[in-house]
Image (tube, rainbow, N blue to C red; front, side):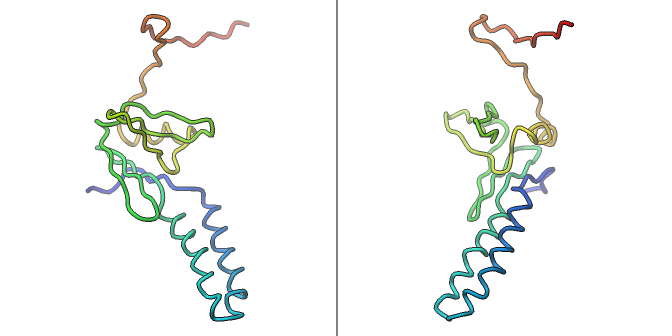
Length: 139
């Protein structure tokens, strides 16, 4: 697999929060040796924050999680759709959906451009499949 054109990750604030939580748990875990496994929780969050995300390749998307990853070629993706929280999911041609970790409506144009994909005009089914034109501002 070639190197990704674009890597989309969670916010860097999550990495800072995980490091802060780790530093905060050191005195707690150092009090007794039985509490040492508590240090694994912020370490797992740190690894997840650094690893989880979506890698954009010219031939598809690789969605990474803490453990494992999924590659989806562009040919299987029917639509990239936002949810109410502005997170993006890939709707697949087999009827499934895959949430794209780290991809939001704000960075979606960069993801599409990096993948060499074009944006199609929205189609209004009620208008008989006609392309929807945005209303013009009238002064």
